[in-house]
Image 1 (cartoon, rainbow, N blue to C red):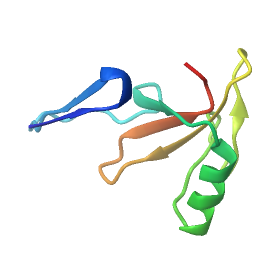
Image 2 (image 1 turned 90 degrees about the vertical axis):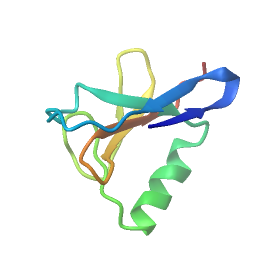
Image 3 (image 1 turned 120 degrees about the horizontal axis):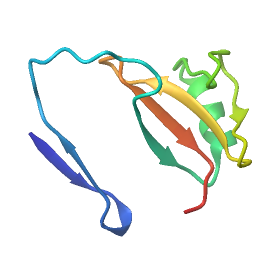
Image 4 (image 1 turned 135 degrees about the vertical axis):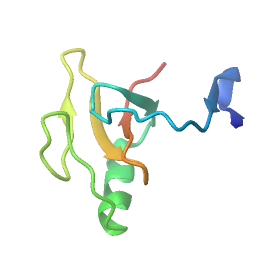
Length: 87
């Protein structure tokens, strides 16, 4: 078990389990960055595959609220969203 604290006292708890979890994009963790385009360029440079919500490779999409987002998978196949929302 690992617990991490992100900025503004936000926490993430990682707990190991033998349970099998379905890994679909609708269940994901989301983080935000003020420079999504720079992150996108970094992922391309490092050959880390990512996609938008519809599944188009190496591109963003814009949500109805105007926020741009991308998705990629961690080494275990869980989905992570990165967006340019300013909380």
